[in-house]
Length: 288
Image 1 (cartoon, rainbow, N blue to C red):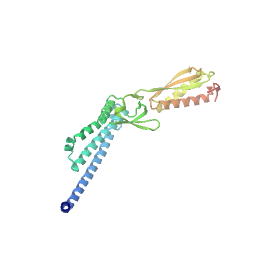
Image 2 (spheres, helix red, strand yellow):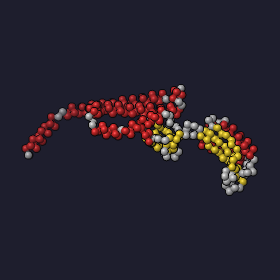
Image 3 (cartoon, helix red, strand yellow):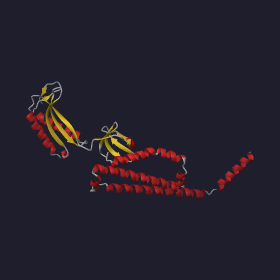
Image 4 (cartoon, rainbow, N blue to C red):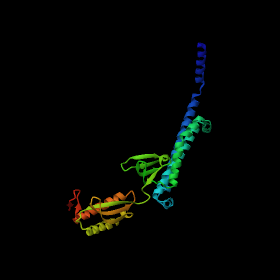
């Protein structure tokens, strides 16, 4: 037994001695330099590709062909994702080939690993297919205000695998595309929000109507109100008997709350200056 161990130890020592260490080191350095060069080329291609894609999606007449700024932003993000994933795939293939891994033989003879990989990729394929249908059916676009499940906010990214939604409180939610089944899109049509001015029954309604119309005309002349419509509905009462002067503000989902707030502030300021009596929470008239 000892003689056998000594013989094996001697053969191992002899093999280490006869190894061409210089050749091994040179091969290792050559492979390392080749990998670094391939990585550098990959990064340059990735950088140039991003520049070209960003240039193609600048604000030009091509935006009109894609259906507007939001649609163009959606295709912009999707094109960047496809380009990046494609580059990563080719980079991985190149690195495995450089280090001597027979990729074709490995994939063909993977057997159980291929089956497991296929089962694991089902979710990825579902994400991609559902994402493509969302795009083709124009259900979502970057910048849309939507509600998906319990999440409501603005879409910041519509990718191949996930959709990112930024909520009003700053929460960024990542939703796999396969989980998107029911979508409430608030950006396809303008929304209407009411502005209610609580008035005293003794308030001069004709003067109130004149002052409100004046403020609406003043705000309508501003550039930010170009896509906003304010319509006077007049005096209405609630079931409690409270008198309100109602105004409907119609604008895009992203701006309707801001425009309604601006109109409310302008009307309250104007009515206060005219000493129009308001109703108080306790039912007493108030003059400012």
